[in-house]
Amino acid sequence: MTQPLRVDFVSDIACPWCAIGLSSLQLALSRLGQAVDAQIVMHPFELNPRMGPDGEDIIDYLGKKYGRTPAQIAETQTVIRERGASVGFAFGPRTRVYNTFDAHRLVHWAGIKGRQLPLKLALLRAYHSEGKDPSNHDVLVDAAQSAGLDGAEARDVLRGADYADEVRAEEREYQTMGIQSVPAIIFNQRYLVSGGQPVEAFEQVIQQILAEA
Image (cartoon, rainbow, N blue to C red; front, top):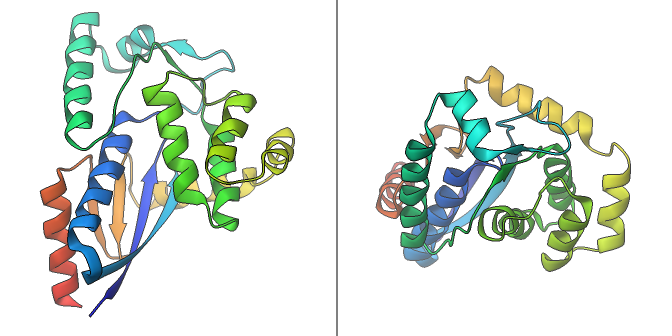
């Protein structure tokens, strides 16, 4: 018998481990097949909310934020590329970090349209695989269209401040819950899993949840 499963996925487009975690989660769900009917709901989290409109060089940004050397950053990116490849996500060269607030507003709108997951996947590919600027409205509209959304409607959302209050409220809600890093994945609004876990880890957690239900 198929069992319903709600998955609240708290993440940022700028987060490589979020791309890995989402790909890993999807593989785990595909392995479980007809045993589970999952509803994945995206929620916003900004790793760099004060980032300016022009973005910042990724080496400088990570060096200042985490105290890492260029060699350490290169080593981490190698690990990320390998982990991504293991779950079918291809990382390309990413040289800059950008503001993602408008992207989160668009993802919120896509949820109303029933196309949230496809848009999230398109945005993760645009930034992490293709190195595009996720704060650029043309990039965001292209991603929306590739996800089956209306490009003109997407641009209208981006022109104004639509869903800004809703995104801020969601960010505060999850911060109040104690979430300080992403991805944070909450199953059935009760079970929290953090980080870009391997496929097997997600599969095991989901099986345990289904067994308890």
